[in-house]
Length: 166
Image 1 (cartoon, rainbow, N blue to C red):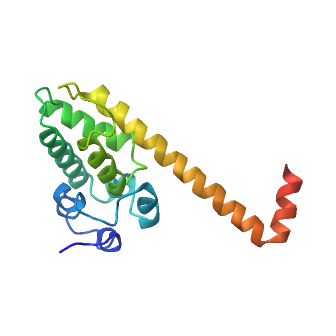
Image 2 (spheres, one colour):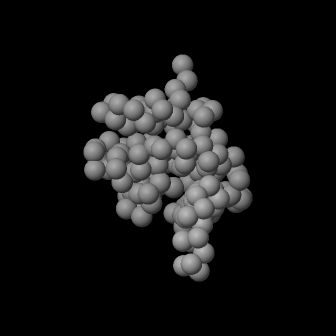
């Protein structure tokens, strides 16, 4: 049974560990691109953190363990490293959501951020996550600019007002 993003973002009291489990989201066909994630309007990690901190930490840790095992390399992150990375994701990347993490982790597993050279550690993880974040921010800015241009195009008064500010 596949769930769509609308279902994924509904009924927040359900355990986040179940709702955002790697095995569920990795197969979710509705979240393939950054555009899909932006359109899904999933709650950010910050919002989920306020609602259920312990469950969110466990869910994020579960994702990291999943990825650590899927990579199939000798030098993966230790249990302590995974806990540190989960805490850093929640403190420094709380604007992301589980759709973002799904795409990032899927691309990570598929090797789209480069070679691991038999080593997966904290700096390598965050270097790769920053590549995803930069693409996501660029996509958001591009969509915002396009939305503004469409608004100006469809509202002559807004177009005059906008040209006066420049």
